[in-house]
Length: 114
Length: 112
Image (cartoon, rainbow over all chains, first blue to last red; front, top):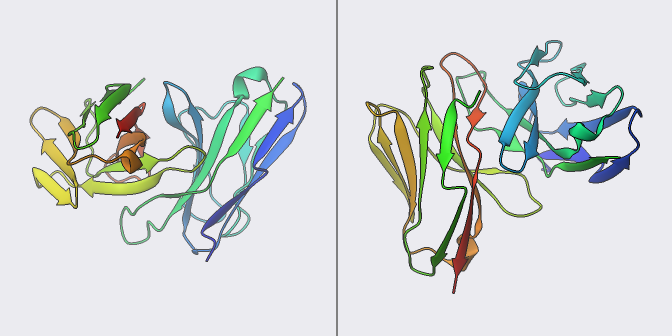
């Protein structure tokens, strides 16, 4: 069982370019999340999805979009990257169908926008 | 706005010491308080968690102390080891949501 996989591992991107970060889980969890991690700011929620077909905005959603076409995949898109989006991005999932449960995190994607 | 405040930002202890990391939450009702451990280059992983109906939870060398009236909770690591060197995040789950609000993290270094 792989758990959560993220791709790419790292990426350097020119400002203004479009970028999609991929996230796939094999645990059949209903809920998925995208966070960004910045030094001194901890983990901040960008977008989330409680179940396939639904998404919601987190604390810092501007400049990002997500989709949840199926249970396993939850891609995060930067339509036009800006340097302030340089960060480490983590995808997570949880089985919240029986109440709040542990969030399991992927290995992260380190993104640098120049 | 930061609803979960974590301190200190960094902590250095010698092997065998007892590092303590503190978190405080504001206003919003929370009903689940996990702590996550993150090693360099890895994603955070659940370490230990507590619900507000108990004041303490212990798992191995890790203990959470919870003070509901003060809206504070802390992580204690007994007999700390170099392998405990990592970044630790506290978090809180707002009632009736699947979300977590994280603290800003504490980088712990345990020297031999």
